[in-house]
Image (tube, rainbow, N blue to C red; front, top):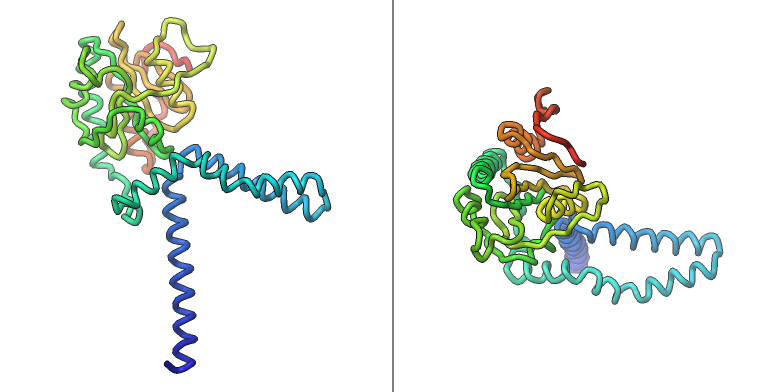
Length: 275
């Protein structure tokens, strides 16, 4: 092989190597995007930044502490990111790690909204308690793993059957992910806010709790009153009318990338906003 060809091959190999590394990093970022791991990565970045600044300013003690933190950081990363690493290995084993991710289109979202509204209307009229959380940008895989995996297409009939009393999956939350029922009987974190009304039960506290740590939309059907409530961004909107409830879900899940009409900014709900 001529020397020029060998040099060209080395350049091409280096370019391919760099592109592959960047692609793997990109997939890893997508994997942890919106999860608690993002906040932990910010903490690691702060530690590295402090280490560099301490070296430049000659802060030996602080620099030594940061260096020890970095030295032991690899073991800490394995422990802290254990759920994300396990998920990455699972996806790699299934061949999904290098698959192209796709976001649901508005038509699928509209069908999902219709199914949720139909199911909650049915359950509200019969006072069947329900808790449905819809994943958005923040990943909810940690909470999905606490329940029973379903990976089924969203339908009003499926949602109703899940929450029928005295069935195996009725106790807990249903989590929807990318227009599918990811899992049922999931455990959600309870809100510890002291401002929650004493008349609200565990379902409402769980709905508020998950809205405080993720950007999910969570729907609650009260077993005692049959009222429909919704939480988002740590706010509880109680006793929604069916039309206002459907409009709110559509605005949040379907028209997120469109210009919203002026009327959508004014939700017509009954009762109070206990956010």
